[in-house]
Image (cartoon, rainbow, N blue to C red; front, side):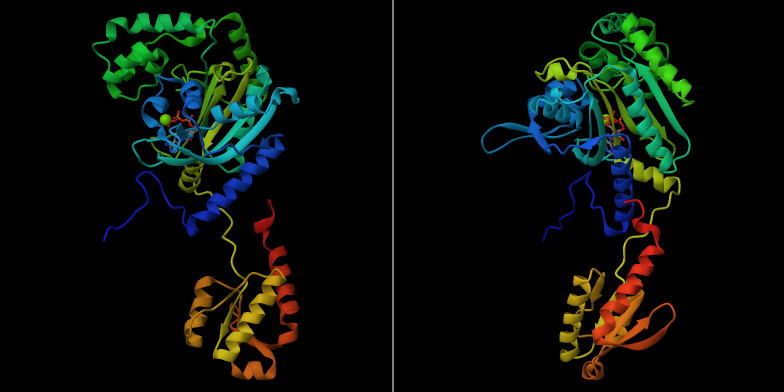
Amino acid sequence: MVRFTAPRGTQDILPEDQPYWRYVEERLHAIAHLYGYERITPPIFEDTAIFERGVGEGTDIVEKEMYTFLDRGGKSLTLRPEFTASVVRAYIEHGMHVRPQPVKLYSIGPAFRYERPQAGRYRQHHQFNVEAIGTQDPAVDLEVMSLAWQLYDELGFRDLAFQINSTGCPRCKPGYVQALKKYYADKLSAVCEDCRRRYEQNPLRLLDCKVESCQPFIDGAPHFLDYLCDECATHFATLRGYLDALGRPYTLNHRLVRGLDYYTKTVFEVWAAGIGAQAAVCGGGRYDGLAEALGGPPTPGVGFASGIERIILTMKAQGVEVPPPPRPLALIATLGEEAKLAGIKLVTDLRAAGIPVVLAFGDRSLRSQMREASRLGVAYTLILGADEVQARQVIVRDMAAASQEPVAQGEVVAWLKAKFLSSRDGNCECAQT
Ligand code: ATP
Ligand code: MG
Protein backbone atom coordinates (compact mmCIF):
# COMPACT_ATOMS: atom_id res chain seq x y z
CA MET A 1 0.00 0.00 0.00
CA VAL A 2 1.36 3.49 -0.81
CA ARG A 3 1.93 5.77 2.14
CA PHE A 4 0.68 9.21 1.31
CA THR A 5 2.46 12.29 2.61
CA ALA A 6 1.80 16.00 2.12
CA PRO A 7 3.30 17.17 -1.21
CA ARG A 8 6.96 18.23 -1.07
CA GLY A 9 7.33 21.80 0.15
CA THR A 10 3.90 21.89 1.82
CA GLN A 11 3.09 21.29 5.44
CA ASP A 12 0.23 20.48 7.75
CA ILE A 13 -0.18 23.19 10.34
CA LEU A 14 -0.92 20.94 13.28
CA PRO A 15 -3.07 21.90 16.27
CA GLU A 16 0.02 22.48 18.42
CA ASP A 17 1.23 25.16 15.99
CA GLN A 18 -2.13 26.85 15.63
CA PRO A 19 -1.69 29.15 18.66
CA TYR A 20 1.13 30.88 16.71
CA TRP A 21 -1.02 31.20 13.60
CA ARG A 22 -4.03 32.41 15.49
CA TYR A 23 -2.01 34.95 17.43
CA VAL A 24 -0.18 36.25 14.35
CA GLU A 25 -3.36 36.46 12.27
CA GLU A 26 -5.10 38.43 15.01
CA ARG A 27 -2.13 40.83 15.10
CA LEU A 28 -2.24 41.18 11.30
CA HIS A 29 -5.93 42.11 11.23
CA ALA A 30 -5.43 44.49 14.14
CA ILE A 31 -2.46 46.34 12.64
CA ALA A 32 -4.16 46.59 9.24
CA HIS A 33 -7.24 48.15 10.80
CA LEU A 34 -5.11 50.47 12.93
CA TYR A 35 -3.63 51.88 9.72
CA GLY A 36 -6.97 52.05 7.88
CA TYR A 37 -6.52 49.09 5.51
CA GLU A 38 -9.52 46.98 4.45
CA ARG A 39 -9.38 43.30 3.63
CA ILE A 40 -9.66 41.98 0.11
CA THR A 41 -9.71 38.26 -0.68
CA PRO A 42 -8.86 37.56 -4.32
CA PRO A 43 -9.20 34.06 -5.80
CA ILE A 44 -6.35 31.64 -5.30
CA PHE A 45 -5.86 31.18 -9.06
CA GLU A 46 -5.89 33.70 -11.89
CA ASP A 47 -5.37 33.83 -15.63
CA THR A 48 -1.73 32.92 -16.16
CA ALA A 49 -1.25 36.11 -18.20
CA ILE A 50 -1.90 38.25 -15.09
CA PHE A 51 1.28 36.96 -13.50
CA GLU A 52 3.26 36.79 -16.74
CA ARG A 53 2.54 40.48 -17.27
CA GLY A 54 2.28 41.59 -13.67
CA VAL A 55 5.24 39.79 -12.18
CA GLY A 56 7.15 39.90 -15.42
CA GLU A 57 8.69 37.44 -17.85
CA GLY A 58 12.36 37.01 -17.12
CA THR A 59 11.75 36.84 -13.37
CA ASP A 60 12.47 33.68 -11.37
CA ILE A 61 8.83 33.50 -10.33
CA VAL A 62 7.46 33.43 -13.87
CA GLU A 63 10.31 31.43 -15.35
CA LYS A 64 10.75 28.70 -12.79
CA GLU A 65 8.33 28.88 -9.91
CA MET A 66 4.72 29.04 -11.10
CA TYR A 67 2.13 26.32 -10.67
CA THR A 68 0.43 26.62 -14.05
CA PHE A 69 -2.20 24.25 -15.41
CA LEU A 70 -4.88 24.00 -18.07
CA ASP A 71 -8.40 23.68 -16.74
CA ARG A 72 -10.97 21.42 -18.40
CA GLY A 73 -11.91 24.22 -20.75
CA GLY A 74 -8.30 24.46 -21.95
CA LYS A 75 -7.67 27.80 -20.20
CA SER A 76 -4.25 28.44 -18.65
CA LEU A 77 -4.54 29.24 -14.95
CA THR A 78 -1.88 29.74 -12.29
CA LEU A 79 -1.98 29.34 -8.52
CA ARG A 80 -1.00 32.78 -7.28
CA PRO A 81 2.71 33.12 -6.51
CA GLU A 82 2.00 36.53 -4.88
CA PHE A 83 -0.91 38.91 -4.29
CA THR A 84 0.01 42.25 -5.81
CA ALA A 85 -0.96 41.44 -9.41
CA SER A 86 -4.30 40.01 -8.23
CA VAL A 87 -5.08 43.01 -6.03
CA VAL A 88 -4.28 45.48 -8.80
CA ARG A 89 -6.37 43.39 -11.23
CA ALA A 90 -9.26 43.66 -8.75
CA TYR A 91 -8.69 47.42 -8.35
CA ILE A 92 -9.02 47.88 -12.12
CA GLU A 93 -11.87 45.39 -12.56
CA HIS A 94 -14.01 46.98 -9.84
CA GLY A 95 -13.29 50.56 -10.85
CA MET A 96 -11.77 51.44 -7.48
CA HIS A 97 -10.21 54.60 -8.91
CA VAL A 98 -13.52 56.34 -8.07
CA ARG A 99 -13.00 55.67 -4.35
CA PRO A 100 -10.93 57.98 -2.14
CA GLN A 101 -7.27 57.43 -3.07
CA PRO A 102 -5.17 55.68 -2.14
CA VAL A 103 -7.30 52.56 -1.82
CA LYS A 104 -5.70 50.70 1.08
CA LEU A 105 -6.09 46.93 1.00
CA TYR A 106 -4.68 43.93 2.81
CA SER A 107 -4.90 40.18 2.26
CA ILE A 108 -3.93 37.04 4.11
CA GLY A 109 -3.67 33.68 2.40
CA PRO A 110 -1.56 31.05 0.69
CA ALA A 111 0.85 31.64 -2.21
CA PHE A 112 2.48 28.96 -4.34
CA ARG A 113 5.98 28.78 -5.76
CA TYR A 114 7.82 25.78 -7.11
CA GLU A 115 11.01 26.30 -5.09
CA ARG A 116 13.65 24.05 -3.59
CA PRO A 117 12.18 23.50 -0.11
CA GLN A 118 14.30 24.40 2.93
CA ALA A 119 13.70 26.11 6.26
CA GLY A 120 11.64 29.23 5.57
CA ARG A 121 11.16 28.36 1.90
CA TYR A 122 8.18 26.30 0.88
CA ARG A 123 6.09 25.51 -2.18
CA GLN A 124 2.95 26.62 -0.39
CA HIS A 125 3.52 29.48 2.02
CA HIS A 126 1.26 32.17 3.43
CA GLN A 127 1.54 35.90 2.99
CA PHE A 128 0.29 38.99 4.72
CA ASN A 129 0.01 41.44 1.86
CA VAL A 130 -0.54 45.18 2.08
CA GLU A 131 -1.18 47.57 -0.83
CA ALA A 132 -1.93 51.29 -1.06
CA ILE A 133 -3.04 52.04 -4.62
CA GLY A 134 -3.58 55.42 -6.23
CA THR A 135 -0.98 57.96 -5.08
CA GLN A 136 2.68 58.69 -5.64
CA ASP A 137 3.09 60.49 -2.31
CA PRO A 138 6.25 59.21 -0.56
CA ALA A 139 4.27 59.50 2.71
CA VAL A 140 2.42 56.37 1.55
CA ASP A 141 5.74 54.53 1.10
CA LEU A 142 6.52 55.58 4.66
CA GLU A 143 3.10 54.40 5.85
CA VAL A 144 3.43 50.84 4.54
CA MET A 145 6.98 50.64 5.92
CA SER A 146 5.74 51.92 9.28
CA LEU A 147 3.00 49.33 9.33
CA ALA A 148 5.59 46.59 8.85
CA TRP A 149 7.85 48.18 11.46
CA GLN A 150 5.10 48.42 14.09
CA LEU A 151 3.91 44.87 13.36
CA TYR A 152 7.35 43.35 13.98
CA ASP A 153 7.99 45.63 16.91
CA GLU A 154 4.74 44.59 18.58
CA LEU A 155 5.48 40.94 17.87
CA GLY A 156 8.59 41.50 19.96
CA PHE A 157 11.21 41.07 17.23
CA ARG A 158 14.72 42.17 18.05
CA ASP A 159 17.54 42.95 15.59
CA LEU A 160 15.37 44.14 12.72
CA ALA A 161 17.11 45.67 9.75
CA PHE A 162 15.31 47.81 7.20
CA GLN A 163 17.06 47.76 3.83
CA ILE A 164 16.03 50.33 1.27
CA ASN A 165 16.94 51.35 -2.25
CA SER A 166 15.36 53.01 -5.25
CA THR A 167 15.18 51.42 -8.68
CA GLY A 168 14.00 54.52 -10.53
CA CYS A 169 11.32 54.74 -13.18
CA PRO A 170 11.05 54.07 -16.93
CA ARG A 171 12.81 57.40 -17.48
CA CYS A 172 15.97 56.65 -15.50
CA LYS A 173 16.02 52.84 -15.46
CA PRO A 174 17.44 52.45 -19.01
CA GLY A 175 20.43 54.66 -18.17
CA TYR A 176 21.25 52.58 -15.11
CA VAL A 177 20.73 49.28 -16.92
CA GLN A 178 23.10 50.48 -19.61
CA ALA A 179 25.75 51.37 -17.02
CA LEU A 180 25.28 48.02 -15.32
CA LYS A 181 25.64 46.13 -18.58
CA LYS A 182 28.70 48.11 -19.49
CA TYR A 183 30.23 47.24 -16.11
CA TYR A 184 29.43 43.52 -16.53
CA ALA A 185 30.42 43.30 -20.22
CA ASP A 186 34.00 42.21 -19.55
CA LYS A 187 33.07 39.99 -16.57
CA LEU A 188 30.68 37.61 -18.32
CA SER A 189 33.17 34.76 -18.54
CA ALA A 190 33.69 34.96 -14.76
CA VAL A 191 30.08 35.11 -13.55
CA CYS A 192 27.68 32.18 -13.10
CA GLU A 193 25.50 30.83 -15.86
CA ASP A 194 22.34 32.36 -14.38
CA CYS A 195 24.02 35.75 -14.37
CA ARG A 196 24.94 35.40 -18.05
CA ARG A 197 21.26 34.76 -18.72
CA ARG A 198 20.22 37.70 -16.52
CA TYR A 199 22.65 39.94 -18.40
CA GLU A 200 20.60 39.35 -21.53
CA GLN A 201 17.09 39.09 -20.11
CA ASN A 202 16.83 41.02 -16.87
CA PRO A 203 20.12 42.78 -16.05
CA LEU A 204 18.85 44.33 -12.78
CA ARG A 205 18.62 40.84 -11.36
CA LEU A 206 22.42 40.51 -11.67
CA LEU A 207 22.49 42.35 -8.33
CA ASP A 208 20.29 39.68 -6.75
CA CYS A 209 22.59 36.71 -7.46
CA LYS A 210 23.26 34.52 -4.42
CA VAL A 211 26.27 32.62 -5.90
CA GLU A 212 29.42 33.18 -3.80
CA SER A 213 31.81 33.80 -6.71
CA CYS A 214 29.52 36.49 -8.15
CA GLN A 215 29.52 38.58 -4.96
CA PRO A 216 32.70 40.62 -5.59
CA PHE A 217 31.32 41.71 -8.96
CA ILE A 218 28.08 42.86 -7.35
CA ASP A 219 30.05 44.79 -4.73
CA GLY A 220 31.80 46.77 -7.44
CA ALA A 221 28.68 47.43 -9.55
CA PRO A 222 27.41 50.99 -10.11
CA HIS A 223 24.72 52.21 -7.70
CA PHE A 224 21.23 52.97 -8.97
CA LEU A 225 21.00 55.98 -6.67
CA ASP A 226 23.66 57.71 -8.81
CA TYR A 227 21.44 57.37 -11.89
CA LEU A 228 18.02 58.45 -10.58
CA CYS A 229 16.18 61.18 -12.49
CA ASP A 230 15.25 64.33 -10.57
CA GLU A 231 11.73 63.14 -9.81
CA CYS A 232 12.91 59.76 -8.45
CA ALA A 233 15.78 61.36 -6.52
CA THR A 234 13.37 63.82 -4.87
CA HIS A 235 10.91 61.04 -4.06
CA PHE A 236 13.65 58.99 -2.41
CA ALA A 237 15.11 61.96 -0.55
CA THR A 238 11.66 62.85 0.80
CA LEU A 239 11.09 59.30 2.01
CA ARG A 240 14.49 59.26 3.71
CA GLY A 241 13.64 62.58 5.34
CA TYR A 242 10.45 61.07 6.78
CA LEU A 243 12.30 57.99 8.05
CA ASP A 244 14.92 60.23 9.68
CA ALA A 245 12.23 62.44 11.24
CA LEU A 246 10.68 59.35 12.87
CA GLY A 247 14.09 58.11 13.97
CA ARG A 248 13.73 54.85 12.05
CA PRO A 249 17.08 53.25 11.34
CA TYR A 250 17.63 51.82 7.87
CA THR A 251 20.46 50.73 5.63
CA LEU A 252 20.93 51.85 2.05
CA ASN A 253 21.32 48.60 0.18
CA HIS A 254 22.52 49.17 -3.36
CA ARG A 255 22.04 45.52 -4.23
CA LEU A 256 18.37 45.56 -3.41
CA VAL A 257 16.26 45.09 -6.50
CA ARG A 258 12.97 43.29 -6.38
CA GLY A 259 12.62 40.28 -8.62
CA LEU A 260 9.56 41.87 -10.15
CA ASP A 261 9.73 44.08 -13.23
CA TYR A 262 6.97 46.48 -12.32
CA TYR A 263 8.70 47.80 -9.22
CA THR A 264 9.65 51.47 -9.54
CA LYS A 265 11.25 53.90 -7.11
CA THR A 266 11.24 52.58 -3.53
CA VAL A 267 12.19 49.00 -2.76
CA PHE A 268 12.65 47.66 0.72
CA GLU A 269 13.15 44.49 2.69
CA VAL A 270 13.07 43.78 6.38
CA TRP A 271 15.56 41.25 7.65
CA ALA A 272 15.07 39.53 10.98
CA ALA A 273 17.58 37.53 13.00
CA GLY A 274 16.63 33.89 13.41
CA ILE A 275 15.37 32.75 10.00
CA GLY A 276 18.85 31.72 8.91
CA ALA A 277 19.60 31.97 5.21
CA GLN A 278 16.03 33.04 4.41
CA ALA A 279 16.50 36.33 6.22
CA ALA A 280 13.84 38.45 4.52
CA VAL A 281 10.70 38.49 6.60
CA CYS A 282 9.19 41.07 4.30
CA GLY A 283 9.73 42.59 0.90
CA GLY A 284 7.98 45.38 -0.90
CA GLY A 285 8.11 48.61 -2.74
CA ARG A 286 6.48 50.81 -5.30
CA TYR A 287 4.95 49.53 -8.54
CA ASP A 288 3.83 52.56 -10.50
CA GLY A 289 3.94 50.62 -13.79
CA LEU A 290 1.82 47.62 -12.81
CA ALA A 291 -1.74 48.83 -13.44
CA GLU A 292 -0.83 49.80 -17.00
CA ALA A 293 0.91 46.49 -17.56
CA LEU A 294 -2.40 44.85 -16.64
CA GLY A 295 -4.35 46.95 -19.10
CA GLY A 296 -5.63 49.56 -16.63
CA PRO A 297 -5.15 53.30 -16.43
CA PRO A 298 -1.75 54.50 -15.15
CA THR A 299 -2.07 54.10 -11.37
CA PRO A 300 0.76 54.26 -8.86
CA GLY A 301 0.90 51.88 -5.92
CA VAL A 302 3.09 50.73 -3.07
CA GLY A 303 2.97 47.74 -0.75
CA PHE A 304 4.73 44.76 0.74
CA ALA A 305 4.27 41.10 1.49
CA SER A 306 5.47 39.31 4.57
CA GLY A 307 5.77 35.53 4.79
CA ILE A 308 3.77 34.26 7.75
CA GLU A 309 5.87 31.09 8.12
CA ARG A 310 8.97 33.32 8.33
CA ILE A 311 7.24 35.52 10.92
CA ILE A 312 6.53 32.44 13.01
CA LEU A 313 10.06 31.04 12.55
CA THR A 314 11.39 34.36 13.79
CA MET A 315 9.05 34.32 16.78
CA LYS A 316 10.20 30.85 17.74
CA ALA A 317 13.88 31.63 17.19
CA GLN A 318 13.57 34.78 19.29
CA GLY A 319 11.53 33.09 22.02
CA VAL A 320 8.37 35.15 21.56
CA GLU A 321 5.57 33.58 23.59
CA VAL A 322 1.97 33.29 22.45
CA PRO A 323 -1.22 32.74 24.47
CA PRO A 324 -2.00 29.05 25.01
CA PRO A 325 -4.61 27.38 22.81
CA PRO A 326 -8.20 27.58 24.03
CA ARG A 327 -9.15 24.53 26.09
CA PRO A 328 -12.48 23.01 27.05
CA LEU A 329 -13.44 24.02 30.59
CA ALA A 330 -14.73 20.57 31.51
CA LEU A 331 -14.92 16.96 30.48
CA ILE A 332 -18.05 14.91 31.16
CA ALA A 333 -17.26 11.36 32.25
CA THR A 334 -20.06 8.80 32.36
CA LEU A 335 -20.45 5.23 33.58
CA GLY A 336 -23.24 3.09 32.11
CA GLU A 337 -25.89 3.59 29.44
CA GLU A 338 -28.30 5.69 31.52
CA ALA A 339 -25.50 8.02 32.58
CA LYS A 340 -24.29 8.26 29.00
CA LEU A 341 -27.68 9.58 27.91
CA ALA A 342 -27.70 12.08 30.82
CA GLY A 343 -24.18 13.11 29.76
CA ILE A 344 -25.29 13.68 26.15
CA LYS A 345 -28.12 15.92 27.38
CA LEU A 346 -25.80 17.78 29.74
CA VAL A 347 -23.11 18.43 27.11
CA THR A 348 -25.84 19.71 24.77
CA ASP A 349 -27.20 22.12 27.41
CA LEU A 350 -23.74 23.37 28.38
CA ARG A 351 -22.74 24.03 24.77
CA ALA A 352 -26.08 25.76 24.13
CA ALA A 353 -25.09 28.05 27.02
CA GLY A 354 -21.76 28.78 25.30
CA ILE A 355 -19.57 26.80 27.69
CA PRO A 356 -16.79 24.81 25.99
CA VAL A 357 -17.07 21.23 27.24
CA VAL A 358 -16.35 17.79 25.84
CA LEU A 359 -17.89 14.39 26.42
CA ALA A 360 -15.73 11.32 26.93
CA PHE A 361 -16.55 8.75 24.26
CA GLY A 362 -16.40 4.96 24.31
CA ASP A 363 -17.25 2.49 27.01
CA ARG A 364 -14.31 3.12 29.34
CA SER A 365 -13.39 2.94 32.99
CA LEU A 366 -13.67 6.11 35.07
CA ARG A 367 -9.90 5.98 35.51
CA SER A 368 -9.32 6.11 31.76
CA GLN A 369 -11.77 9.01 31.41
CA MET A 370 -10.01 10.90 34.24
CA ARG A 371 -6.70 10.38 32.45
CA GLU A 372 -8.22 11.97 29.37
CA ALA A 373 -9.39 14.92 31.49
CA SER A 374 -5.85 15.48 32.77
CA ARG A 375 -4.38 15.20 29.31
CA LEU A 376 -6.82 17.77 27.96
CA GLY A 377 -5.98 20.06 30.86
CA VAL A 378 -9.64 20.79 31.73
CA ALA A 379 -10.41 22.61 34.98
CA TYR A 380 -13.32 20.35 35.91
CA THR A 381 -14.52 16.83 35.32
CA LEU A 382 -18.27 16.26 35.59
CA ILE A 383 -18.93 12.68 36.66
CA LEU A 384 -22.20 10.87 36.05
CA GLY A 385 -22.91 7.30 37.18
CA ALA A 386 -26.13 5.38 37.87
CA ASP A 387 -26.35 6.79 41.42
CA GLU A 388 -25.98 10.39 40.22
CA VAL A 389 -28.68 9.89 37.56
CA GLN A 390 -30.95 8.51 40.29
CA ALA A 391 -30.22 11.46 42.63
CA ARG A 392 -30.39 14.00 39.73
CA GLN A 393 -26.90 15.16 40.58
CA VAL A 394 -23.51 15.59 38.96
CA ILE A 395 -20.22 15.14 40.78
CA VAL A 396 -18.04 18.12 39.90
CA ARG A 397 -14.34 17.47 40.35
CA ASP A 398 -12.01 20.45 40.57
CA MET A 399 -8.91 19.07 38.88
CA ALA A 400 -6.38 21.50 40.37
CA ALA A 401 -7.69 21.23 43.94
CA ALA A 402 -8.31 17.46 43.59
CA SER A 403 -11.60 17.97 45.45
CA GLN A 404 -15.13 17.15 44.42
CA GLU A 405 -18.70 18.11 45.33
CA PRO A 406 -22.19 17.14 44.16
CA VAL A 407 -24.16 19.76 42.23
CA ALA A 408 -27.86 19.40 41.40
CA GLN A 409 -28.38 18.63 37.70
CA GLY A 410 -30.71 21.61 37.33
CA GLU A 411 -27.99 23.98 38.61
CA VAL A 412 -24.91 22.68 36.91
CA VAL A 413 -25.21 24.87 33.80
CA ALA A 414 -25.44 28.08 35.87
CA TRP A 415 -22.69 26.86 38.21
CA LEU A 416 -20.28 26.13 35.38
CA LYS A 417 -21.20 29.27 33.49
CA ALA A 418 -20.18 31.38 36.49
CA LYS A 419 -16.84 29.53 36.62
CA PHE A 420 -16.40 29.95 32.88
CA LEU A 421 -17.02 33.71 32.96
CA SER A 422 -14.64 34.26 35.86
CA SER A 423 -11.95 32.08 34.24
CA ARG A 424 -12.31 34.04 31.03
CA ASP A 425 -12.08 37.42 32.75
CA GLY A 426 -8.99 36.35 34.58
CA ASN A 427 -7.33 35.11 31.43
CA CYS A 428 -6.47 37.69 28.80
CA GLU A 429 -6.43 35.19 25.92
CA CYS A 430 -9.29 36.97 24.15
CA ALA A 431 -8.16 40.50 25.01
CA GLN A 432 -6.71 41.38 21.63
CA THR A 433 -9.70 40.42 19.51
P1 ATP B 1 13.38 35.44 -1.48
O1 ATP B 1 14.47 36.36 -1.92
O2 ATP B 1 13.54 34.95 -0.07
O3 ATP B 1 13.11 34.33 -2.48
P2 ATP B 1 11.29 36.91 -2.69
O4 ATP B 1 11.96 38.13 -3.16
O5 ATP B 1 11.00 35.82 -3.67
O6 ATP B 1 12.06 36.32 -1.43
P3 ATP B 1 8.74 38.20 -2.28
O7 ATP B 1 8.29 37.85 -3.64
O8 ATP B 1 9.04 39.60 -1.94
O9 ATP B 1 9.98 37.28 -1.88
O10 ATP B 1 7.71 37.64 -1.21
C1 ATP B 1 7.40 38.37 -0.01
C2 ATP B 1 7.74 37.58 1.23
O11 ATP B 1 7.11 36.30 1.17
C3 ATP B 1 9.21 37.29 1.43
O12 ATP B 1 9.86 38.36 2.05
C4 ATP B 1 9.15 36.10 2.35
O13 ATP B 1 8.89 36.50 3.69
C5 ATP B 1 7.92 35.36 1.85
N1 ATP B 1 8.27 34.27 0.92
C6 ATP B 1 8.55 34.37 -0.41
N2 ATP B 1 8.76 33.16 -0.96
C7 ATP B 1 8.60 32.26 0.05
C8 ATP B 1 8.65 30.84 0.13
N3 ATP B 1 8.91 30.08 -0.92
N4 ATP B 1 8.43 30.25 1.34
C9 ATP B 1 8.14 30.99 2.43
N5 ATP B 1 8.06 32.33 2.41
C10 ATP B 1 8.28 32.97 1.25
MG1 MG C 1 11.95 34.06 -4.19
